[in-house]
Amino acid sequence: MSGRRVLCPLDRIANGAARGFSLDDGREIFVVRAGRTLHGYVNSCPHRGTPLDWTPDKFICARSGLILCATHGARFRIADGACVAGPCVGDRLTPVAVEIDPRGRVVLG
Image (cartoon, rainbow, N blue to C red):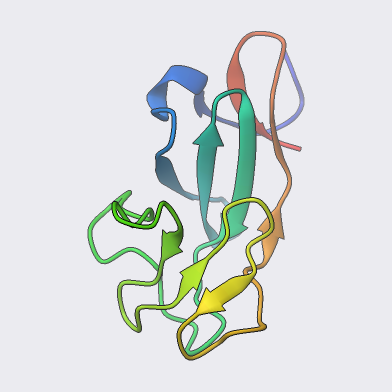
């Protein structure tokens, strides 16, 4: 068994979607899946510090395919968390290291 924190099996995050998690240290994070590539971020908009999702696990804008802040409409690239539209252009989401372990589970990296 791995000593790293297991978040969920990979198949619990649909390809092109995201899922939120509450960590033992109090942080709220989310993980975006693009095939077998994962991107993890703290669930906090750099503009006001509010959570990005207003509905659980709804982080991706259906039209743009970008991460969307439901509070302010800011949009962030999935690959690097950079804000490309909205009130915090130039800022970034705080990354969280995540990976897929040999058993096909999403784990903190």
